[in-house]
Image 1 (cartoon, rainbow, N blue to C red):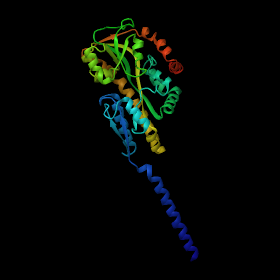
Image 2: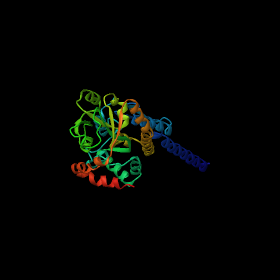
Image 3: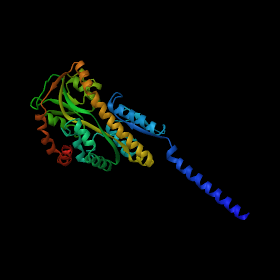
Image 4: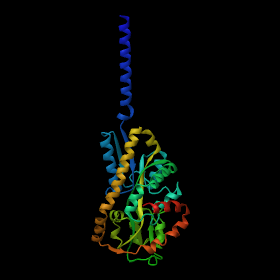
Length: 329
């Protein structure tokens, strides 16, 4: 009788341990609701916003609604620089990072002139060892995890009256450029005079003559309605508008390993989705800009490409990474 009692006690104890272990496996992270804040400066019809919506959809599908994004578009949370600062501080979870040049000077080459030859070159770069090394280095230097890289098209020049085709044509031309490095090098490569302005001021600057022209991808030219104050679209293709999504270390470290894997995979898919969206829509965007009255001007890019050494001389820290990217086949 005594042996039976001991046996019962052992069975009960084992059962309790089993249930405790099952409870531990099912608890904290597998049931916890996670809401990640994501802020960007683009309009809701921009590919980056569409990519964020896609990421949110995938996150909810893969976690049965447990993880979701709270998306703040069009600068409604903060401007570009302030959003990055908030992510690094852990006050915001996610935002785009165009360039890590302030933390990792060599990374500025990603927005350098003619770093990428075409979209095929970009795709091959994203499957290369150079890409993985770059992502890891940016994460370390910025103090926030780089999840992925995407692009939203090659940047082209627009002008109000000047039908420019060569660097000589752009001499003394006041070109609005993005107001932080290395974007102003667009003026260097075109041989123009850079006029740094935030995106919200560009339309008025073009209207009033503060700037004679600007440079952006088709998407931005269309969504910002620059075609209303610019006549010529000059296909210089001088820079690939590349960017990526970063997540704060605070948010990343709060996720379980399983959730980290899901978030990583989802933002890689979303980045590729943005790429494909841009490529598939490019011809339509060009036709839309033509229909809005813009005159499309084809140029020989080689005279502009020949000016790349001028920029590399200003940024010698770019050279090694530039050469590695150029060598990607």
